[in-house]
Structures are given as structure tokens and as C-alpha cells.
Length: 166
Image (cartoon, rainbow, N blue to C red; front, side):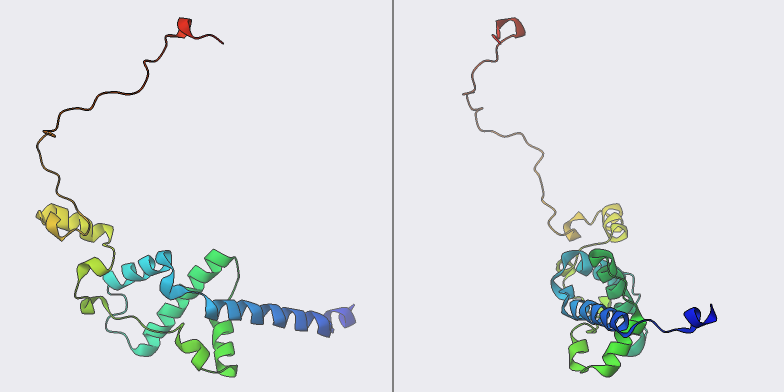
């Protein structure tokens, strides 16, 4: 019985698992984080909360990696870990990793507030302060009625239930 527990898995299973993990890692490194709208909204929310401020570049990279892994695993159904990515980074060409680990500018560097979506708290604060002009894509609707004459209906008059023939 001890012999069965001490045996390592067959080599073909190890190779298959390794190939699957390699495929998952390739998918992770080629995932379009920079163009994915949902990921970018989450990143903007993190930046708005100053989660990355006053952190070293290594800490920023770690936080971004954790966020990317969480999002990637959620979207693709994979189960990659930071350890998997870092071990692949150590063995692979570091240039493959740079696109994934780009640290975005902190929220204090945003010059134009319309370049990122507002968080609910920011939106609420703008409304409470009466600064609705600071809300992106906020249209001013006049308080007057339309002065144009109404159009004439071209739809036929609807028949009453007893006038309908089945």
C-alpha cells in the first residue's frame, strides 16, 4: 500500500499537466488587459482609491499582477496563481512579462477627469456639491417644452376586441 502512495505520477500525466499550464500561461501573457473595458474600469477604480500611491514599484507590480490574475481566472475559468506566473517569468524571457506588468500612472497624474469613468463616490460628491458640470457626458436638458407642432399619427386605429376576426 505504501508503494502506491510513494509512486510519482506517470511521466505522461506530468507532461500533460505541464503543457496545460504552459498553455494557460501563454493565454495569460497574451490576454488583452489594456483593451478590456471591464478590466480597465476595475483598474480605474483602484487608481481612484489611491491603492497604488506611496508604494514601491515592486509592490505596485504585485498588486497589478494579483488583479490581472483574479480577472483572467474569472473570465477564462483558469486557475493560475502568482507563483505560476513568477516561476514562468524566471524561466522565460523577461520581455514577455513587461506588457502584462506595466504599472499605470497613479490617479494624481490624471489631467482630464473624462479619461476615466467616475466611481459612485466621486459621482455622489459632485452631485452633492452641485458641480454637475464636472460629470462626464452629462447633458443639460432645458426646462421648456418643445415649441414644434405635434406630428400627425400615421398608425391605423386599433380595432376593439369584438371587431377582431380570428
